[in-house]
Length: 292
Image (tube, rainbow, N blue to C red; front, side):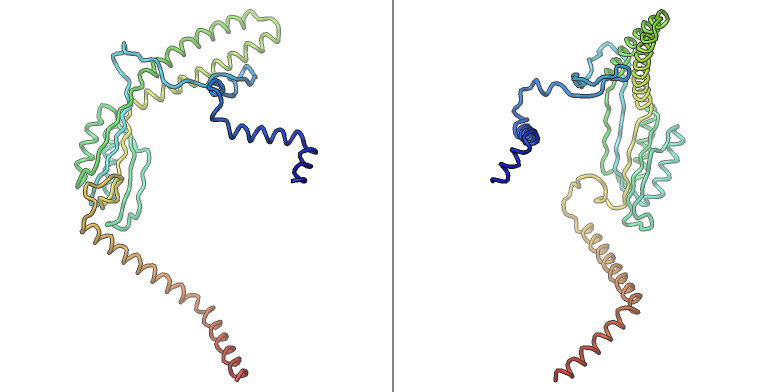
């Protein structure tokens, strides 16, 4: 205790900061709400300052007046199939015919028909989504689960358009100021503001283009397996004897393979452990003879 008191006396500033940190960690949940309304972040380039500003608020103002809604559709299917690799190739070919493309795909244990699993994620034109889903269902032995989700991004899209209009008007005004500016400092400040505005405009246009393309090309993720329980879903029957039997056989085969692998390794390393074992046995027998 005396050493601690002595250290505090010698390092008053460090001790004070340590107390503040501990106090904040202990009582941060009891701080008034106003302290949680603000956050530190970098103000957009061109202003060159760091300050306390309100964080961005989630959500967008509703736009019920828009008739043509912008909806991003995403679908997920779990399919029981005979052959995972062939089905995956067939899906990819069909998607190309529909004017879509593959995003990614994967296969686990492709050489083993009974334990093969895989997935493929594709994008197809929204107007041909139903045709694609019908084809995916037909290539399956059984459609285990299917989920279609639509996300309406119209409000966000309209909000971006309004923000773009404001930024473009502001940019025009700064361009007019730049033409009239004479001092070097004024010219540099206006140019920094123009760069900041252009960056914001480009970001919003990029987001707007992403929403448009995502709404035009629906995303579909298809999970494939030759065993129903290998698919990402909750089975309706918790216990099925035939499935348990298949798993037991696979476990037996896997154990036999591991045992065979172990024996092969022992055989290869016999050139090391056999001589060592012989020498150890010889030395042990000599010790026993000497002891007797």
